[in-house]
Length: 251
Ligand code: PGA
Image 1 (tube, helix red, strand yellow):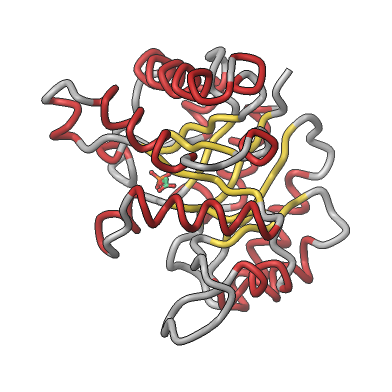
Image 2 (spheres, protein in one colour):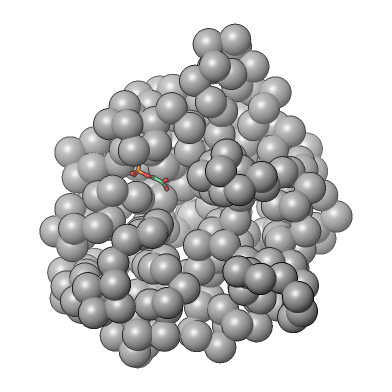
């Protein structure tokens, strides 16, 4: 049985004070929900402050990106150790906004992935097709390429504890959600690709989240699909009640 995991990707939102308030509200509202890992991913500037709120609770902490080098002349970047020392256990990698606006490629996602697992962080690696790719019926090829690219040279022990997030780009922040059937179809493809890389047993342990306009009203149907193990939540994670509603749909 895979344990559900619901993560809030706050993107470039919330000042430190607002982030602390939201984190406190989330901690209160998800208290008592069992069988779900809950993770908050604020901006870098709020990580330490949010860690003060969530440490000692059941809520985990994650970064939204990370460089693969330990230190050096990489203006604007942040290292695995820096995330760890703010209290992070997780890091989102290869989000489509990083791929689209900041030039991330399968190769750089793989470098970040290997650095994250080497440091002991759990990567949440994002994959997903654009609308154009879906319309050209290349979703399967795109997603298989992104998965095999991200996991290249990653050993099975590290792969087994990593998380994949399927986020169709056309569903992110648009209000358009993949239907549970559309999402399940791609989740099954992702698991099949992981089986090819690591065998069925290990692939069966890797959690695959769905992301893209998840809301309290559509979460339960998505989470009832056999290969959907939780969600990566953007817009709805900025409101504690909505986010907690989604967590409860998984619990
Ligand atoms: P959304 O974003 O929930 O606002 O669609 C999801 C994400 O980008 O992780």
